[in-house]
Length: 269
Image 1 (cartoon, rainbow, N blue to C red):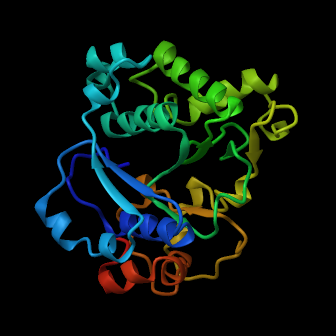
Image 2: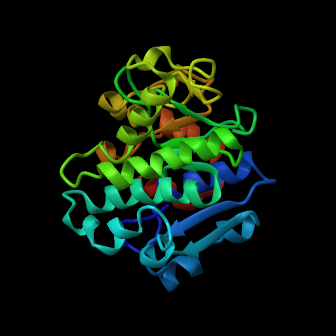
């Protein structure tokens, strides 16, 4: 989901899309834009031709939210008051999309290393001991997925905050699961106590935490080779160029080789 309104995609974005498409050739990979797509992007993105399961879609947030619980929040221009409009728009749209359609949501600054349909039907992962992350979430269309999606969209409707960074993203799924799992201890959450919703450990989705995100870009060996997803924390690392011997470059050569080769020395900027 691209909500920055820059109208194009970076090499990091394309790597996320390519890695997801490679890992799931039988799935449709939908890239949603909250602003018009540039002609330059449509012309350059040969990845869309290489991977037939990649689709672009332009969404108009007013129309997209119509007849949903967050329609009033969107139509009242509540997002315009936000201190972090881009990030909070992404927060709202990821939960709204899962509420409308179900499926798997992924941030655009990840590398997908394994098929995700081998996991539980409904899941998220701990980002830390305080938060369940919202960078990768799966809500299926079964009763568990629908109940979680409805609880998440209701939380956004009732508790949206324009002045807190993580309140509308990881804060939503964390609050919902604390209620569902009947515990405030994030580390205890699992499918048994969360009534069928699985909460995986950070090692499978956030093997390097955001405070140490620079390690993806510095020379070194990737210590955890068993993760499903590697999140490179672009908000914290956007100005870093990955060393050719860095974990991020190693991941890119393996899981998004087309993008890595296409961008060469400019990959990751």
